[in-house]
Image (tube, rainbow, N blue to C red; front, side, top):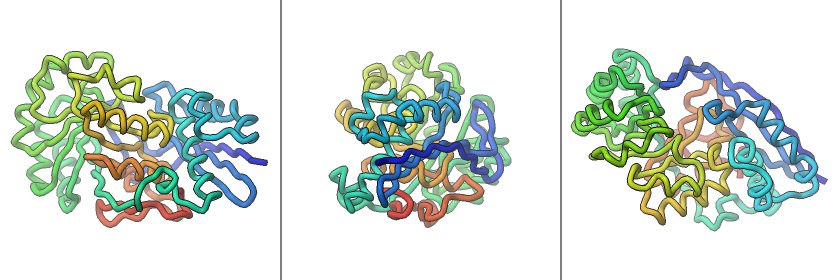
Length: 326
């Protein structure tokens, strides 16, 4: 007989994490555990207000399936039993973990993947003043890939300052829907000589049609505009890449499906995460093996992480240990 446990947790962020939509000082997550006999599978999600999600709402979604889960519902059946989103992500990843523990095989083996390899992650510089972002870039100039949170006004100065402070680092920028078509048209040509190689979700998802008529000398990646496979058709002609996040796809199962479909349709793949503990990020390491851009620095932004968390060597992140997940 299975036993389901679902809990809301809050993990302090090291300082304040700021994007165009606001700031936060803690990562609010939901932890799901599914125990069966001597084995326990775990999954973690980050309910996101941008999509109308809350910790309480996600817990309610999970609890609504308690009977079926404890009776043996599998991750394949889960896909049709719950809508994509944070709650399904936690359950899906917990079921992957449980299956790995019960079978004595790794999650990578279950997915038909070779042994996981370390990957280089971007390191995020929170939205701040020009001087503060320059200082943060200088402190992290040893990192090969920096991701800048932007918002519109003053962004050119921010990027220029970061580039000057970390001249050897590759740069990607994320406006989190904070630009207008006019800002895009003005900024993008000026970002090319500053070494920016990708722009993430510059326009609001509800108004990104304008991208079809704008020159894209730098690759543009869909985040808030891309959730599951069904969202891909509307991205054609507007985006060059998609940011896959397990909280959007509803778990690792959905993430694999989206990655395969995106590649088949000519999109480059980025794998991202929310600010969360290593438990939320660990499953994404399986998708990271095929991604052009990896943005899995969530645990690095916390004041503390879970025990047996992911091992980082600078920006190099190593596959999860069995004690953590998978």
